[in-house]
Image 1 (cartoon, rainbow, N blue to C red):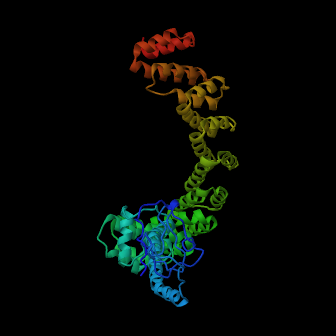
Image 2: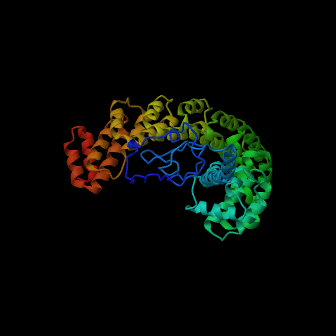
Length: 481
């Protein structure tokens, strides 16, 4: 019997020193025996090429090195059997992978969806966004746990009413809970104001009840002015405040409707007509509807002339704050009388507060008389507070006249001024054209100064080059020397 020579001893060879067979390069099918992959991945059958990590030893057939001969081919039955054996493993891996990715996506999107829902609710409610760490966020979470949706309720995304408020009652009493209740009631008032009013009366107390009812009345007046006005008129003597709230809101949104309501009210309640008309004017001028307010004042005839003057003056004041030149054109066109005089005075005061320099220049252009005197006095008084240097320049170059003299005399007769300021007041008094008014103004200045610092006042009068000998003597006598 022939005995094969023993195999040579094994020794390490690098991958580059090992000659690859066609089966190992994938050109011919490898043996049908399964090969264990070094990384522990899915077994590879002999009929499939073996993919190896770079730099690792090539995987050879499990035949002994000393055996030679052709590599047997795998039969179709063996290949089919191997594939069937791998099918459950592949399906299992697919299920695991699918579950992993679905769970990962769900875990990522779930908190985002909750946050988006909370954000949508808070955005529609017109409130700042906040998480569970804020007081409003914690309240919202508690309500959601009870089955309520406060943000959607306030935003109109869900029904608001008795059920939502009863859900709120299940939370512990707190200041935040009561604020939330008022907000819910306000939202309820947009669709069912009378029901919201009944709830507020029965369930709220004190200041919260007053505030809630006022808000409901305002919301109702904006959405259904006629119904809200009828409700307000039925409140009796104690409902005057609510009627005025409704009137102002209606006047802001529907001036013609408010004018009709106020005219009817004046016939029915002449004693309260002036107050209600003033509220209507305030509402009409809120968005600049000055022409509507002007027509209202012209067409409304109150029983008392004083009340009529008060309406004209109120319109002039409101108009003068925002469009003084147009208001002045209207006021100057009024008939001569107390109404025109008072309107010009109110307008001048409002204009002087907003822009005293322009108000002063415009007042100079008015016709001579009481209205011009009042307008000039108001303008220079405000100008003195904002820019006395510019005012001093204007007084120095202005042409004296009786109306101008009265304004400057009023301005110069200030008490408690500093010594430097007192000298300027003397300069202003010197610009008065009327000698009698000029001297009386200077005496007033000197008297006040001598009370605070007699020696300084005396020194000034004795040395001032502005004073004539007669004026100097009169002022020294006023000081008491």
